[in-house]
Image 1 (spheres, rainbow, N blue to C red):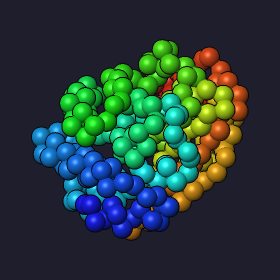
Image 2 (tube, one colour; image 1 turned 135 degrees about the vertical axis):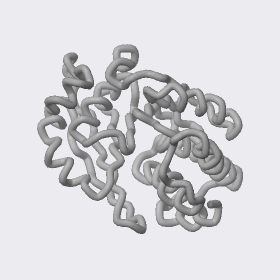
Image 3 (cartoon, rainbow, N blue to C red; image 1 turned 30 degrees about the vertical axis):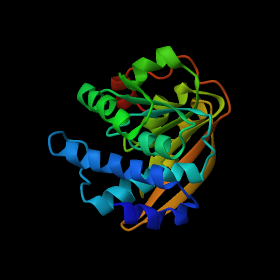
Image 4 (tube, rainbow, N blue to C red; image 1 turned 60 degrees about the horizontal axis):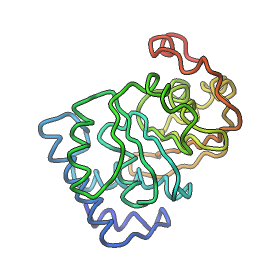
Length: 230
């Protein structure tokens, strides 16, 4: 895992101290161990964890200077991309948000072992936003929902001038076409689309800038979002 991680960093134009590399590897190994008793990920081979979880998460640092920024990882699952970003850039103020309590309890236990300070919140994205509306510089999410749904769940967390970093797969551009109305209604502007090659195709990050306030009626209840996406 460590060799794969070190080999992949130059493509992201990143260099990290040995200590952070070791902590990233330790977190990857902790995910693999926990996956034996809890469904965290379908990716369990160490090299693949390094490529498709750790390096994939770190790609955000090649796009944005996150130092000192307040970031929320919506639907964080096993902690990707938030935890690797925090290990590589300790100056990020990180909130991890997921609705599955078991997962968040595990993260709360494992993060101190890799010296990561993060707020772990068990809640639904469309409900927790009432406490944190437009209070983050960055909202990110990976493999949570199609883009037009994802943006309604993430954009309300971001302050005007902040950004949504949506991590997507090969269907990113198709989803963007589908999400044009959502982008407009939620106060967002597409800033850039960046592809990161991986062995089975490409991972894509869509960067949206928050250029206006999100109207107060968003996000709606999740059943409504899913039933009639923007």
